[in-house]
Length: 112
Length: 113
Image (cartoon, rainbow over all chains, first blue to last red):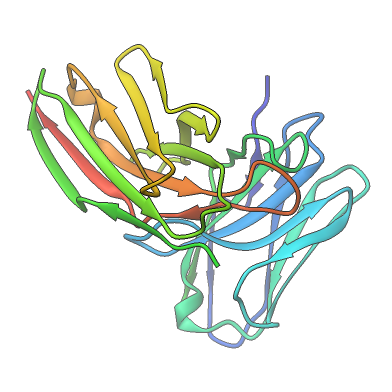
């Protein structure tokens, strides 16, 4: 039973660059959420998608965007990277809204 | 929006002791309260959750209690073992609709042999 998968595992970028992170949910799960986890803090909500539509957005600037594909996988894009964007980016999937969320292993983004 | 406070930030216990982590939340509409365990470099793993129609839930050595009136919930781990050492996060949210989870800042639990 495959869990949530994310790619890449690690990523190093420089300020001003753009990055795309990918997430594949558990088979059968239709909802994907993205979280940012800064070292020493709890995950902070960025986006939620259900059936390919955005169903929630956290308090993040417009440099952050996301989308969900027909196969329910998702991408998170961050433009004009800042040093403060360095964090672990977690994807979580669930069967439907309100159900239990299961997290992927995360993508560790380092911005130099 | 929802705000979740978690205490303590670190907790050191001896193997076999009990550990208690407490969280408070601000939005009285929240009705779903999961707890996640995150080992170093690993993903958060759901260990137990509680919904507001119950006051307590147990799963072997782990239990969670909820007091909706006071807006606080707690994680109780009995007979702690070194492998329980990790960071524990509480979260609060709605059990339906567009709700997502608001997390606490985490508690680092250290269990010494």
